[in-house]
Amino acid sequence: MSTIFEAVSVDQILASCNGLWDSWFCVLQQAASVSEFLIVGFFTATALLHYLVLLDHIDILKDLYGRVIIPEAVWRELQAAKTPAVVVRWISHPPSWLEVRKVSVPNDPALMELDAGEREAIVLAEMLKADAVILDDKAARREAERRHLPVIGTVRVLDDAAVAGLLNLPETLEQLRDAGFYLDPKLVQFLLDGQSRRANGKR
Image (cartoon, rainbow, N blue to C red; front, side, top):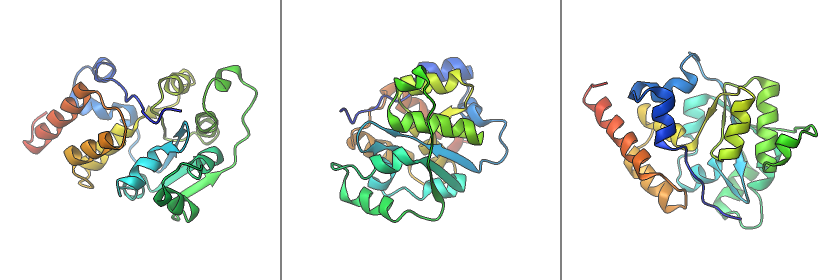
């Protein structure tokens, strides 16, 4: 299966947030304190956790969100045969801020079209009324949004981390792209322009 993901398009961001940089944060604008997030795995041995471990930025999740919950299917995916050894070692001895939950998925035709990790993450997000579920796959995002779940993507997590001073955004985006994650060039430029505006104290 493919290990390339398609990030949310800049056109979608601009359309939903009226083109304003500050509105990049509109998905969770009403949440004054984010304490519980769900991470979802995609395809074989691929997930936000996978990339953050490879890029040595995994601790940004703890710093940003405090506690992260993943469904058991994602835990299994991160230990699949072709997973890089560093990722397997990490998930075999997870940090205290990462919690793995067993999930029973109902026989819902809409969910059956998705990957096991995506199905479980969406169900778990509904059960826990989580602050957000992190999804990059288009079909999974659509299904989560249909269920009125707050959805963000990998790039949003990295941008939040950059705003918090936890990483260098240009370098990290380049590393992410080198690792096989597809990034829309327009989205990258949008993010970098936003960073410049913040550095200059502009909106």
